[in-house]
Structures are given as C-alpha cells and as structure tokens.
Amino acid sequence: MQVRVGTVGSRVIAAAALAALLGGCAGSADDDGGKSASPSASAKDTSAGGTGANGKEAARGGMIGASGSACELPVSFALAKDWKAKSIDAEKELAKASKGEDGDLSGALADTFLRQGPVTAACEIDAKPAGNIGFLRVWTGKPGDADADGVLRAFVAAEDNVSKEKYHSFRTGGGLDAVEVEYLYTSKLLEETKKESAFAVSTPEGPVVLHLGGMDTEEHEEMRPAYDLAKQTLKLA
Image 1 (spheres, rainbow, N blue to C red):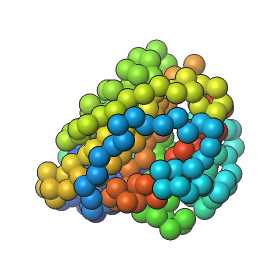
Image 2 (cartoon, rainbow, N blue to C red; image 1 turned 90 degrees about the vertical axis):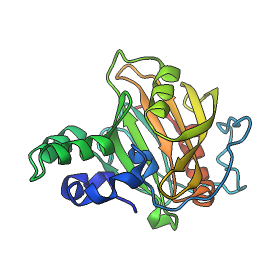
Image 3 (tube, rainbow, N blue to C red; image 1 turned 180 degrees about the vertical axis):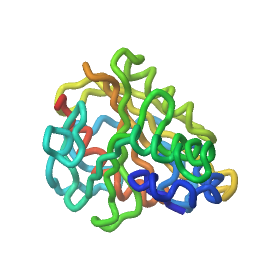
Image 4 (cartoon, one colour; image 1 turned 45 degrees about the vertical axis):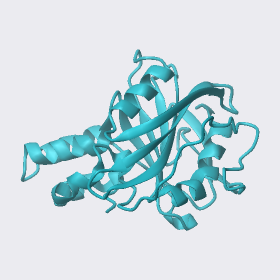
C-alpha cells in the first residue's frame, strides 16, 4: 500500500497500521506488490543514452533542481515526460508529525518515511501521470558527510531486507563522479522480492541520492528509462 512521502504530514497517523509493509524506508514503499528478480551482475553506465533495460527511451520533459523549479536541489537533471515532481520539506513535516495526536508514534513514522541513513527526502517525482506505479525520489544530506560511495552504502544499509547489492562507479552526463547500486528488496510480510536502483553524487552542498523503486520489478524496469535520463543529464544546479 503506497503512503506518499509528499503528503506524510496529513497521513502519518493513519499509516501506523501499514508500517510493517514499508520495510523500514520510503524507498520500499512504492506499493505492496513485488515480483522475483535479480539485479544485473554488472550495471551498465547509461550516461551515453537514455535507453533502459527494456530497450525503451524516455521522452524528455522539463528540468528539475534549479532555482524556481518544483524541487530546488544541489543538482539539476531532466525529467521524463509527464512525470510530476513535488518538493518535500522534511523538517517541516517531521515537526508537524511530532505534534500530532499520537506524539512519538507519529514522529517515528514520519522519520521512517523522511530519513534513510545519512540523507533526508527532498523531492518525490511521481510516474503515475506517465502510466506507471512508482517514484523517483531524491534524498539530500548535509555538507561534510561521507563521499558518494559511503553515503550510498549507508543508504542501502538503512533499508532492511536487501540482498545481492551490486555497486559500480560512473560519471553522469553533467560530469559528476557517481556511484550506483542495484539490489533486491524483500518484503518479509508479503514474501515477495523486487528490484531497486539508486545512485549517489557528492556536491559542495552535501551528498545527493536518487532512488528508483516501483510496485514490482516489472514496473521498475518500465520506469528505468526515466532514471537513466536523470543519470545522463545530472549536473550541479
């Protein structure tokens, strides 16, 4: 069951009954389905093209990340056509949740949705207007945090029930050194496994992680061209 990070302030109390489904992080909460899969033995650098594993290429929409865009971030990148971005004010949502009727419970649930390892949710890009079920989420950290590799490994370690992680380095189309991981997430409650992907870069304003989940592995692969488009266009904002 999807509980949207972007609206966590109004839904966090109702989400208490669903907390067991979320696997400890918003990245695994794209939906409650999942299909068995395995990550590729060696993820490919797609900075030269926007074609995903399914052979499709994402049509380019607008840019995100720069001042005045829907999400102002340390980096900017191209969105796939029809994907819709929404900024997340994590500190505001956490403060709001901590004052809710359930007190500590609301705050704990909000923290689950809004923080993962060393980074905090900053932007949620919804694939539903483009016909898929899932999100590309952007997480940011504070200046002085570990390098991209360390941040990404901590991000994955903070997500329970992951396996078969495959890391590799690449350079984004905007010239930033990056580290990427593909892995499997297993819902113990549903006894189902799905593929997820993420990559991280370091910036003067702190680390940035882009994460692609999906309802299941099939949806993940359908959305992969949008993720690859972000990789090939990502640069400092």
